[in-house]
Amino acid sequence: MHRRVFNVLALCATCLWLAGCAAAANVTSTASAPRTPKTLVWQRMSHDQAQTLALRYMAGMSLDHKIGQMIMEQFLSATYDASARQIMHEIQPGALVLYRYQMTSLPAAQAMIAGAQHDSPIPMLVSADNEGGFIDNLSLMFPPRPSASEIGYRNDPAFAYAQGKQYAHDMLLVGINTDLAPDVDVQTVDGPDQSTRTFGSTPQQVIRLAGAELKGFQQNGVIGTLKHFPGLGAAHTDAHLSLPIITETRDQIENIDLAPYRALINSDDPPGMIMTTDLLMPAIDDYWPAELSPAIITGLLRNELHYDGVVLTDALYMKGLTERTGNFPGVDQFTAGVLAIKAGCDMLLDGYDIYSSRAMVQAIENAVRNGTLTLDRINQSVRRILTLKFERGLLPFAPPSVPNAPQPQLASLISLPLDAPKGVVA
Image (cartoon, rainbow, N blue to C red; front, side, top):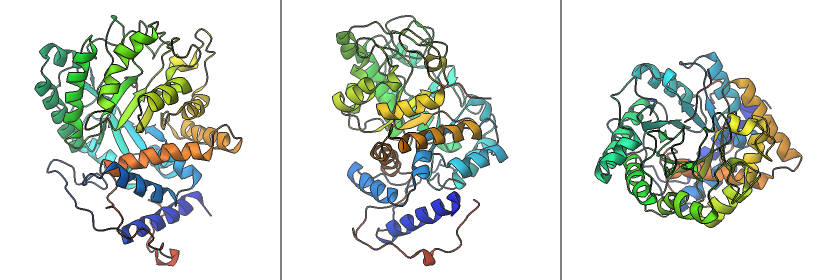
């Protein structure tokens, strides 16, 4: 059976089963949210309820559909054109990232996102880098917002919260539900990629202000993303151009770089996602860059800090990964994708056209077939991604009231919709 048809049938069967055994969801859309397909803000669920539904949802998903959920796509175009539509129909990505060149007009940006969401069997995480200052992909549509350093200079958590709330309002109006912010790097050197992007030079100030901004996002309908794990605050080089080597001791890493993550992971509203990046920390792993390092992603983030949310890579084509540095030989972006999943990452920021996206999906499928990756490892990531979508309100199903309700017969499924320049990640 054609992959698209099979996936739609399997997914619809699972959706009808869930809907049949669930009470009606309570819609709580905000007045500012665009009335476009699959972008309404639904009532949030508890983590346990969301995870139960995620596991049931996964029962109807094929391997390639699961892999699609693990891809954060880019479109080269500024409209929902044929190339973007091909990506959506063939890859069925779990997330989308947008850049400034794609958001020059509010109606056009809304139309592009609505078109992509309409063609997505599972609502996507739609994201952008909106930190304020010069890292502001909404700046052509809305007034400029203060940078993290400006917020740090004010040193007022109420002001930081207000900025997060304002950003959430703006993003929901466009159709964006995820911000790749706040940046919680604790700046201890004058690095080239940190200018105006950090809230301060002490963990306490970063925790206080980034935490307030994170609440501003997440209490107003937008998922927040802490970055750049485990910390770029002591980097002397730009990871877009080469691999930064962080020479801090393990105690310095624990007491400075990891402090914001430890505090905010354990807060009353922990981050929906954490983004890792290209950096080498020899005190923890002297070979693998952070996003490819089992010691950093699984050992440090999962086992030590007990984070079970979604971990997103930085762009896998950046030179910090593709070029040789020290003992690390450099790898192509598709090998990097497999290694990142093996290390414990859940979502790959990679695709920017149908060819690179196909190659990434094929690399992951091959890794599952040859035993480099296990199906259990894939399922861990998909479970986290779907749990986040349920928990944060992107999938509108209420907790099931009849746990063992039978699945509907496929014969009952009617009117199936069978045809439904690289960005620079900051």
